[in-house]
Image (cartoon, rainbow, N blue to C red):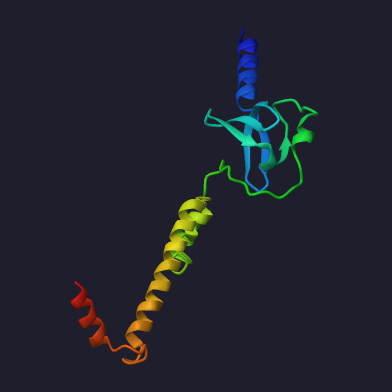
Length: 165
């Protein structure tokens, strides 16, 4: 009886502690998950937190099967073309994200967002920075320009604008 319970415990231990399939994406994200299903466009996996994720085949570099069986159709969907990986499966390192947000984020706004693969917000921040730099340049040029350089003196401009109002 005791031998039977020990064998059952060992079996349960190996079943629940069996490593999952290792999946490597083209941006070198490496994670373990169980391959559930796939079609011509997406690889559906179950992560260790029991959530499912659909990853486009064009972002997958390699699958090392340990718990699920290899399917010959996988080779048709995995290619060697470089693409931008938009799937974020592996959590970002908080220290690196903070460093990227702090520097070069103070000089190039949105650097932390680019690291976090939030390109829309990163592009918004960097374009706002470029627009503010252009506006500052125009303002400084107006302040530093000599008074009669534009052909019309400043007093005349303000007088003309008051007449038309």
